Length: 121
Image 1 (cartoon, one colour):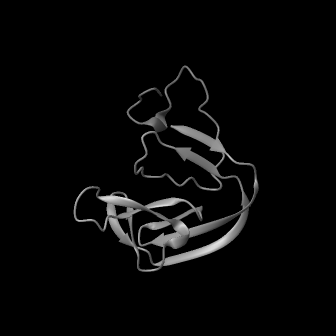
Image 2 (cartoon, rainbow, N blue to C red):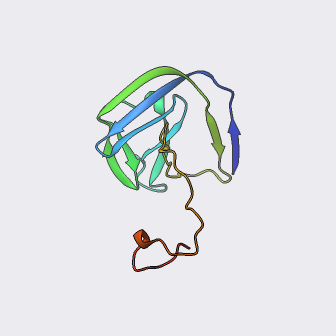
Image 3 (cartoon, rainbow, N blue to C red):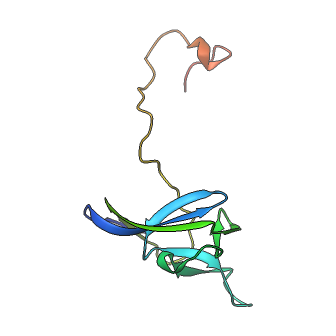
């Protein structure tokens, strides 16, 4: 596997929405769709900018219809992942922002909120 982070600049993106949620990818991103061939692979790749509402994509290994497809341009970093050998891989969408937290405070006494008086691992 190889990972490359492209510099931050305006990119053409496609937001793909199903009943399960949405994912935003580059317009040239290859998305897994059910194979039309009767033999061989269970899925094949289709460019995100070629997908339309009503097309079927694979989400978590299940077939889902696209309910909305939106194109836009956004200034962002793109990450390119190359698989060797190439094949389908379920992506994980990270949120733009997350809750900022601290680690636990070191203590000789177990934290009662952890339950059953067990110390943190």
